[in-house]
Length: 414
Image (cartoon, rainbow, N blue to C red; front, side, top):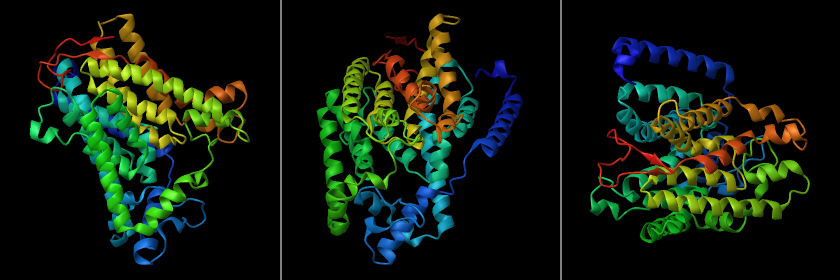
């Protein structure tokens, strides 16, 4: 924000400190304490596999039905956990989440702050506070999940290597797709970004991403042939390992259909919804890339990945962060006091407030088949659909210095 509007550095520091105190109080009251549940699954699996000589996918966290569900390459990446004491593993997990989230925020928020003439460190600090309160982010940290690392790999790839006008030297840009490929080898769901590259006709980057994922997978197969065989032939297809599809935390289109009829969820209805969603997404992504707006392509693909995945737990919705930030970006770029500005910023505020509220958990043990339950238990899905429908595509100046929204230029949305 302009320094003149916030009364100088001293007042800005005071505002940031006040925000930190408010967010810390909010987290103390609202945040669930998951005790790094998923990290315990990874940690236990690594010890069972590498130190005790057991089979990777046979391990289950004690007193639960949950075991290691990621591909063998993810196990290779996580294998150093077998050497770490538990509390150091927690420290590493939290630091990775914080650093990758901070870098992503800087990439997306700094161009906005420069365009608007805000004090950059101040805008970034406020953004960090807001994201810390975001339920999917705090769930990711409290579970010890890997979502922010995957989002970082994909965003680094698209915003720095794939994007037109990136300042990265050409000799490095030939590796465009490597980040997406590595993310896909660690967890299959980022593979939607390979489809994104194909839909937007970046065939070389798509080939690089697919080849990277394949090489990483084959490397894992050589490193752990038994685990690889079990994952690709058995564990991948065992949906009981990830939980019930109708559980309220599953904020995907599959979860919506499953909550209508938990005993007999319609696969046909789900596939029809997925088809319509993917067609709309493909059309919008091609428009975004034609306009030079790679960030919106990233955001739309993150949203559609959450919608079409059979299982999208609340912590997976960190993939909505780029879309929410760009919604604010577009709102601020609209003319002052215009209806468009009010609509975009209003949607961003309402969406954010719902996504920090744990609203869907009201229906955790309630009937979600009636109208109030149907609307409330799927609230995060409705926000995802709204973002996919209305997030504007920006016409960016490709000849200007990258990133395009930065230097005070006008951005036209369409």
